[in-house]
Structures are given as C-alpha cells and as structure tokens.
Length: 90
Image (cartoon, rainbow, N blue to C red):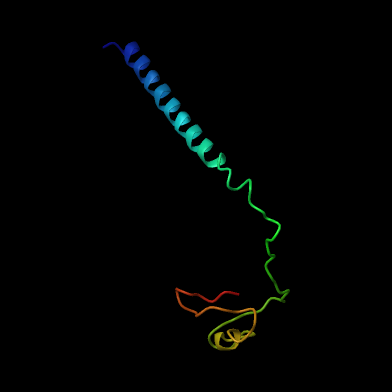
C-alpha cells in the first residue's frame, strides 16, 4: 500500500467515525427533547426555597470564632448530623 492510499483510508475512517458520532448524538438528542410529558406539566405550584440573610461568621471546634459546632447546630439555619451522611447543612 502506498502512502497516499494510507492517507485516503485514514481520512475515510475519520469521516466514518465523525458521522457515526453525529448520528448517535442526534438520535439521543431527539429522544431527550421529544418527551411530551414535560410539556403537559403544570409548573405553577412550584415553591420557592427559604433563606436567611446572615452576616459572615466563623464556626470552629475550639470556640475562637463566633460559634462552635455545638452552638451552630441549635440555630435554625443549621441542620444535618455532622457526619458524611448527613453532613451539616448551613
């Protein structure tokens, strides 16, 4: 096989790969966005999340900041168990 034929085969292979990805993506994209169940949903009953406006503060274990973790967990803006599952949520 001469080098020009190798280059042509390589280019043809690249074109086939690109076209196969493009076809696969268009099929996936069409399946995702053709779902009619979302079009009929009523989103008027969505609730807004609550929030607090807080000044910056520091939580540490030794009590050198504004709160220790024992003090922070009794505040309404702190929840969770302080472990990997569930962690503290501020």
